[in-house]
Amino acid sequence: MICRQERHLIIQARLRSMEISHLYELGTLESTYWWHVAKRQLITEMLKTHVPPPSLLVEGGIGAGGNLQRWQSIGYTVQGLDCLDESIAFAKEQGIENVAVHDLHQPWPVQQNSAGAVVLLDVLEHLADPVIALQYAARSLSPSGKIFFTVPAYPWLFSDWDRRLGHFRRYTRAMMQEQVKQAGLKLETLRHWNAFTLPAAIVLRIVRRLRPSSRGTEFPRVSRWINHALLGAASIERRVGPMFGMPCGLSLVGVITK
Image (tube, rainbow, N blue to C red; front, side):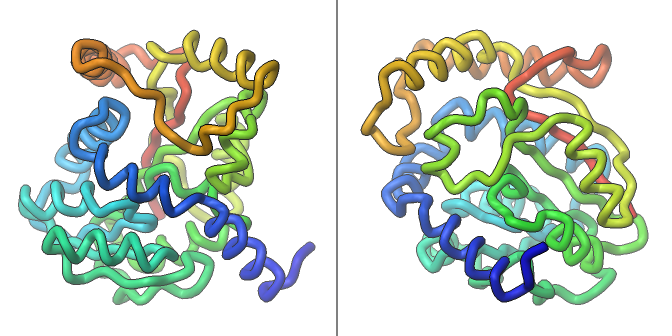
């Protein structure tokens, strides 16, 4: 069992291991690259269904700020927290003022019981103690508020790419369920997402294990036509998934309540 100070040092080291160049790349690709666009569309539809605007929306781990910009544009009052100064600078350049540098393991600078939604997109895997972060996130929620999250799936896919991004883990459904339970919260929905790229991801992981890459955390480039096709596939899955569920997928997506 690690103490709070040790945990703080570990998480800072891991998060800083995510190359700043990756963040700058994210700032360039966030508005067009299929992965970021599809994930933002998925969560935006879930937000509109469960917590429609106007409402206070808090995002933990804001990346380059593109998500907050989108949600502000459709009527949410947004607030963002991130451990990287560069992320905060990116967000402010896009007109998002209520953002601050903050360690999600520490009490959140958000008024208790005020937020309709907390969004944690591919964030929990970066945290040494995600249970504590979930507890602090829950304190900021109104009685009917919800936490929306995505995490990477399948521990057996964990690779050097995950390490370079500062990931502590990839998730199974059982792992996610257990962390939510430990936080004293309830898992309202949980399902797989992004099944259509799973075969390619498996092949890529095998190739990288046999032939390690020195390209860091760079996103795999695709042509404009492939990017469009992947967005189309994501759109189909976004409509089919809630009705029938997805038996597999590179990510898990869900909603947590108090």
